[in-house]
Image (cartoon, rainbow, N blue to C red; front, side, top):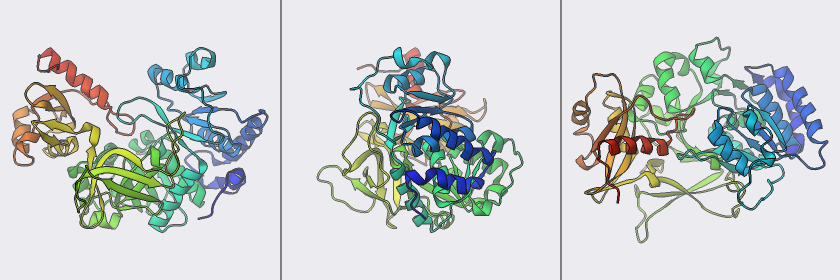
Length: 467
């Protein structure tokens, strides 16, 4: 794969704009060229905020901004007032493109900035990340960090030209990196909004030549509705949120070439991936580390390292972000995540869950993902999130906030079904029924909102202990 420098972006785009599909590819270069000329009229590169839902407008603006060294902040067009308030407290853009509420269009003079009024880095690419809390932050990347991610992907899958069928939003790292892989490798980038895919609209492509990236909720839908079509893809990358065992078993039974991934906005997408061949052979891990990254399992003090020793995941990678805007972190560093994992006997990475979400009940450690997987496997619930709530006796009480498959589902049925699957201390002490769980458009649960649901419900029944 060739190394594409920033100054060659527009010439490369002009040569390869026919590699775009799903929208009018003839307009990408002219729009990008025109915008680049406009940006260059400024005495200094303007700060650009891009919250554009249209893929043509997004990509032409993104490439023009990067090519002219403009700092660019990517935004979610679906953000509401609370999120935009957070954004404009951090950022004062010179130019706004896309869907931003009218009250924020002239926000530069109306909202005070926090931090130390640091200016964005020239040419930096600021990608939004909300984690599990819902608080908007921007991970600082560059064209180079994103390029390193693409190089590692290309080497790992031994492919020089990467064709991507993208259903995920371009403002998010999961969608943006699909574009970057295809653009830098001169592959085809086919954009198809997930809403169109769900409607089974005519899609003209040969799936066997494409990578597709999905989150678990999308995979579940496609397994039910379009499994034969999905099975034709070269590779189905799965990430964004934990996948439950029953979903993986179903995908394997339908011969889906699934590649379980581990990565995040901070690493410019995946840094560990399971090869589809290994998945189909029964491997359910997150696979091997990609060439551009290194993962270290950091154990508790005085604990000896051994296979399957659980610890915090530390990351070193060429694709690692520079920090959360406006702060810049040292370049030579180990990035400590909130994730817990271990190496299995094959040397593959296995994820346990988030360290901050670990529940300590009666002195025992409980990881929500394990309990959630057991509950989902019962087939009695549509969705579930397990959290720990304050308890006078147990310290924390395991609490399941769940969406039942139907109104006839009773808690004793679920309890009976998980009785032999997980240890007794891992069983939920509180069960809270709800109509839906607060997930974002990539399937990630907002844990703060789930805790609020649990707290409100249990307080009403006086089951929450307040220390």
